[in-house]
Length: 144
Image (tube, rainbow, N blue to C red; front, side, top):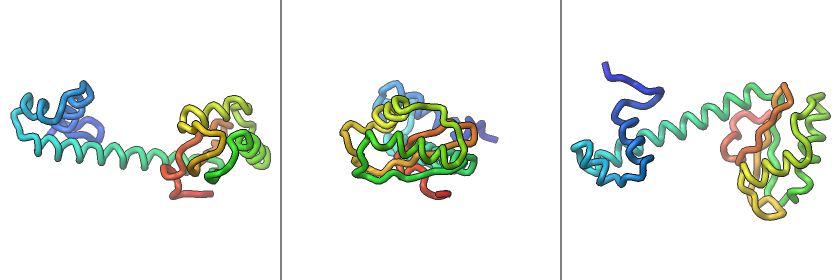
């Protein structure tokens, strides 16, 4: 039986480790004694598993959440903390964050650089008052 590392096979993990060190697919192929095409195939399969795992985690987080809301592209950044705080208040959830913290999550975690959203974002509010701001495309299967 082949040894597994989470979702990865031993070969996938070896390829990802070498690629993470900055080696090219060709260099990895030489080290492992296989073709570059084989490395490409192994890497593609491993990255597909990473994307699937991220999707799964995001769906699970939403299932464990109190609510989620999508804030549409074009909304002014300075209006968003109030929207989130108001929603938490409606639900009787004491949010673990203030205006400044929510704003910084938008600016840095999601990468919003302009004063207006350039894409939809998803806000997930948990029962304990914690929350996450995510790109809307990462968590849209379980809107509540």
